[in-house]
Every structure is written in structure tokens, then in C-alpha cells.
Amino acid sequence: MKFHVMTLFPEMIEQGLHTSILGRAMDAGIISLSTVNIRDYSEDKHRHVDDYPYGGGAGMVMAAEPIAKCYEDICAGGPKKRLIYLTPWGRVFNQDMAKELAKEEELVFLCGHYEGVDERVLSRYVTDPVSIGDYVLSGGELPAMVMIDAIARMVPGVLTNEESGETESFENNLLEYPQYTRPEVWRGEAVPEVLLSGHHANVDRWRTERSIDRTLMYRPELLAGAVLDKKAKKYYNEALAAQKRADDEASKNEK
Ligand code: ADE
Image 1 (cartoon, rainbow, N blue to C red):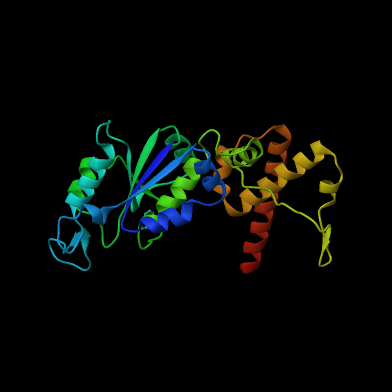
Image 2: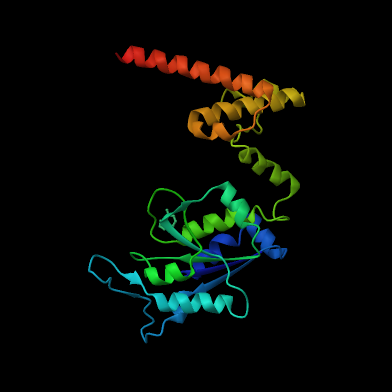
């Protein structure tokens, strides 16, 4: 799979993505990355890519033409590729989107800066406006890197079998269970005994229950989409009831 990134800071993208699992996948030729500097498409003698906003207001707006030229160059000689524009007003990115986008052979990312990008180039070419969360960043580079990491992990062959197992657990809408490594006792705190027992069924059960606890605590809205077996469902109902009793108790004490 090939990722193209249109940006004013290509070195930021290159440095961030050539490491760890993605670096390994690039070396193996499973994925590739091509960064293009939008400034190279400026026709201005000072290489400007932005201008004042019509209607007034603070900041600068990235002009349509350098971006259009850059994208047309990336698509030259082939079909139009899906174009993802990183913006706080886009659809919020999640694991399902990562999985779906990983089916594409090529993807193009547009990283904006300044106060925005001329709407005419966005409406002409952008297929997917995407946000990585409800906060405002200084540019689209970090969001593009976040998306490329999550998408690349879903491309067959990028993760080893062992690594893919880890992702599946989140795909069932449950958060990761707690992990422990040596030493067995750290500053007086021991590892949960069940993990030392060698009893795989009990370890699995313990991990599912801790995942349910954690999801209930931090992301309860995810649980509606989780597929739980009978025992897990029973545990979930009990944990939910216990949580409700604790909440009721707390609000009673407030009064
Ligand atoms: N650009 C600035 N903030 C962003 C966000 N939260 N997601 C995607 N792109 C952005």
C-alpha cells in the first residue's frame, strides 16, 4: 500500500514514520511513503502558498492552485485516488475507518496549515475530511501520521501474528486488560496470582473481566458494541449493578 502526503513539512512526516513497526514494513516493501512539499507547486517567486482571506479575518488561507497541482501530479497517468483532508471539522477517525481505508491500494493525505484551505480545492478533490479528535492542532501533519500508523497496521503482513492478536481485542469494543512483567513483586506490589498459575482458561477469564472493568470505567459507551460470551455477559451485568449501587450511594451522601 502506498501513502502520499501533501505537506509543508515533509521532513516531519518522514522522521515520524520510518521507525518501529512501520519502518520494518517499509523496509520489507509492504507499505511505502511518499511526501510531497506543496511549496514546490507555488508559482510565486517567493514560493508563497497562502494569502489573505476574502471577507477579512485573522490568519492566512492556503491557496487552491498549488494544492490542486500537487494532487494532480500525484494522480497523473492513473485514476483519481482517495484524498483525505485532515481537519477538526471532519468525521472522527476510529478503528473501523482504519480497517476500511487499509483496503485501498493508495491514499493521499492533505495536511493543512494557517487558518484553513481554499474551499474550492477541497470541494473539488477531497473525498474524506477526517478529524482525529475534538481539539485543534497546529496542522495536519500529526493527524496524518496518526492515521497512517493506524491504517498501516491493518494492512496484511505489516503485523506479525502475535501483534495482530493485540488489535483484535480492541476491535471487540473492549479496552486492553492490564499487563505485568518481571519482577513478580515490585515495590511491595505483587502480580495478580492468576497470571502465575499457568491455567490458560482462568487467565483468559481474568483478562476479559479486567477489560470489562476498564471499559466500564473509561469508555462505557463502547460496551454496547462488544460481543460477550455468557460468562462475560454475566460478569458485565454484575459489574454494572455494582457500579450503579456505588453511584446511588455516592449521590445519597451528597444530599
Ligand atoms: N488539524 C488541526 N486539528 C486537527 C484535528 N483535531 N484532526 C485533524 N486535523 C486537524
